[in-house]
Image (cartoon, rainbow, N blue to C red; front, side):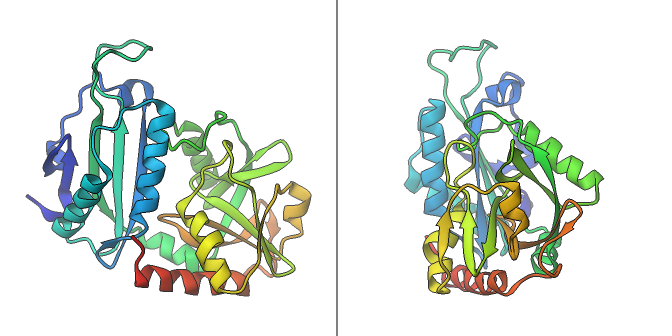
Length: 286
């Protein structure tokens, strides 16, 4: 077994190329499933308990029964990371409703399918965290419950692709005049030395990195945070803007559409947050 290719599928350790998923898996047919991505730093899962809490919340809201305990998932994460030999990367975990003849309603007696594997960090994201990212703005065409981390990511995929075509690194979603989040990130802005971000409700994902910024990182840096809605006019007055995510970390935004943010370079607040966040990862967080 190639170490980096190790996977876990339905209670068995195997390799990714040996995983066989039925075309009748409801994740394949309907996108009927949920997922999580947990950061691996220096050979350890970071903030795994936060991710598992969100996973079980997503499963509950999607009415997918839990057939595996959090303690067992924690143990499997550890085995996958150790056996893969990957020191810095992420563990992907996906739970679909299961496999059954195609019908929109939930088939009786169906058992969820669970897939997990490890992947290495993308070095390009580390470069962007240092130099800053360029983003475009798009209308948010997603459904009303993006707080559920479901497999239904087509608007996110199309948004990310549109950003790529325009030479940008990500896209920020707006509902009318109101800022939501990025295609795979939460958004923050800095004004008068205060960090502002949209409150987490059903229209954005309650990101784990977002939570850590608000509850641990910013307070330890002595920076005030405020959750409030942000419109285009208010965003235009930002001194700094940054996006956050499990694989993104904290990445400064230096350009929005054709507008330069601040002086076009990562600002002092985001640099301070990055330094403290790096320290938090080094310390470890279960």
